[in-house]
Length: 187
Image (tube, rainbow, N blue to C red; front, side):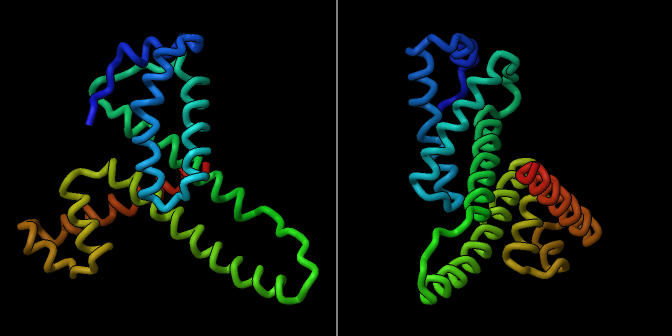
């Protein structure tokens, strides 16, 4: 994995610098596609989201101040996941095309239920991914064991050698960060 070069971020402030923008796209395009595909976004939609993400970066790069102590890739993936969420939300609310037959109407109702369920699943998956990036290692371990794998709180405390009270604290923090991520995605 390549590290972010602050000099590249400075060069792309010049929107006419095609060479630097080409380098930026070459480095971060595949990364963003992997992030989006890992979240179940189809290839075509992922390509659109990557383009929108780059447009957002181009719009705001003038005000952006790179902090080498923070993850630029996390920043980019957050933008991309928000864009993907907006795309999924827009797709869910699109009106159906006129079918003309009872069979098409029934099929649309059935697929509409599946899309709604899938839409909520992806939304939650994106929020969990964003939250995990903000959790400490211990909080992430507790979340993974309790909420994902279903291990009992007492067993998690024993496995990790921590007090049961701290298991509750970690779970609470994880859930709070997931809620915040959902609000960011929706915002």
